[in-house]
Length: 416
Image 1: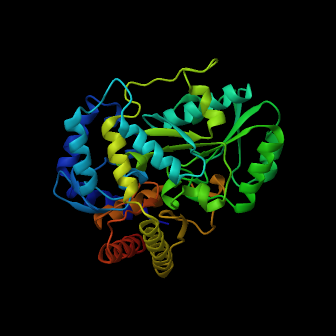
Image 2 (image 1 turned 60 degrees about the vertical axis):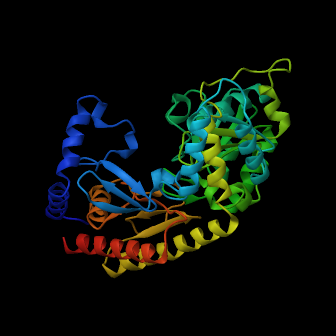
């Protein structure tokens, strides 16, 4: 779709306005593998280096500003340097930053999560979504006495070996395929790990009928159903679990529940989480130096308290309108553009067919890279692969600028 000449022109223009970022990237390569500490943030020829951020705007070291529609991959639901969170974090740091014992900030956040999420009768904190997923797996093994798991193609639950690639204990099946789930499930399966909407896989929502099949089939074989709400908690006050009316056995949470600080959590009924109760016989041990970190707990509670039902509703409505604008703009420029959406997350696909499984998503290509560079040149910061996650601080003026930025980016691609 995009010619080599067009792509080379975008690269040259990008390089022409990011001289300092290039120097930072060269410096980074001397001490960081590939110049990165997060694989997902890399893109060619090099990523811009951010020096400051406030609200919906981020600024790179060359002085270029961008409207941020990625928000650290869904975690900053109120944008950058959100005033109430900043004030809370500063106050918490002055109290001591981290303690070697329980504190009420943990309880405040846990009580809020328990009130908010249908599955989280009790909560156990970790430091990331990856850690939370691994803890949920350990709980499922202890509860069921089994050690095999079903995951979905295109799903992402973290970077640990068991959950990030081929593994002898894992069966991967196509998303939204109830027959494949039924075939994979037997009495050796401890749990199914399930994202209600594939994030990395292309923001593909689960079909309601598929969700019902998951619940009935896991019940059939006595396996736990673990919902990964690390990204989808923003979709509704009670997350995607509330959206689907799902009765899950465990829930994995992270990202926005820390207000921008590192955190993870597993929620579930007391009958499952009592396996972590050190006062009870047969408990499994689970520790972590920073579990329930004071600053993360306080900042996370503040962020969640400002994420009301009305705030979520407004964000979701804005995302729906923006998705429609982007699709219409792409078609107007003669480009194949499909936008998949779930709540305030969406993914801009450069393809004709709407995907319902990860296998339906066109792999990252020169076209995808061209759109990303064109958006940067228009002052829009999205994920290199096409992911967009809006924040509550975007105004109508910002949203119009974003829609216009996509239109101009498509025009660049069509002209090339």
